[in-house]
Structure formats: structure tokens, C-alpha cells
Image (cartoon, rainbow, N blue to C red; front, top):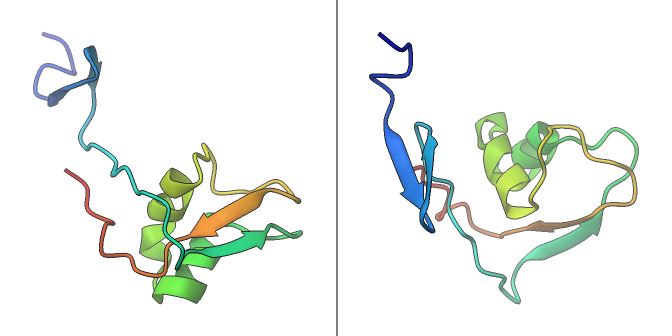
Length: 89
């Protein structure tokens, strides 16, 4: 028995993958906050600053197509004003 046999299979754009959530696709808005990452910026710190909780680090990472909590210096970032779309399906 595979250890993944009880994990949900997700099909997205005709690609099947194993996972537990589908990340939201957040459209750009004129209200978004734009900034350039500086030394020490991380997704969890930005989530705390803008949303009041580090738990939404994944939302900041998803919106900016980052694969890590650490952000390279000079990276242009987009922070949606509202975290209303921060829903995992």
C-alpha cells in the first residue's frame, strides 16, 4: 500500500498531482501594495506586517510565485490589500 493512497489527487489544467490544497489565483489590482524586497524580508514577516498574522506567509509566496519563505534582495513584490482570497481548496 502506497503512503499516498489516502492523499487527495488534484487535477489542474489536465495535470494530475498529489496534494492537499489548490492555491488561489489572485488577479492584480490597482489597490495592491508594490514593494522591493530588502535584506531580511521574508514572507512570514510581510504577512505579519500587512495581514496581522504570519500564518498567511503562503499567500504572500503564492501571489509572488516564490518557492521559499526567504526573498532575494531586489525582488519586486505584490501584496494584495485584502487577504480575502487567501483560501485553500
